[in-house]
Image (cartoon, rainbow, N blue to C red; front, side, top):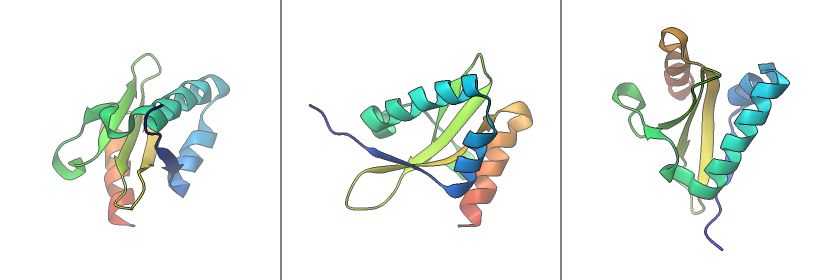
Length: 101
């Protein structure tokens, strides 16, 4: 059995999750399981102000999950935001949340 990661949603990402409809939540839950299994190997690297972070995409739903690995003794994947890409809004929100931490 391989390494399993702990996935944590910051409070704002939890709010994002609960604003989704049931169908969207189901898809996001599957992605969170993928993060538990693959950690930072999942998704695609982000650049610019979000360098060091990654994203998982749900193209059909237009959703993005922005995450990174915390700097702890154990592997924790921290979800920063969940939302639609429209006008790069999800990335702007992610940058703001990271700055305000």
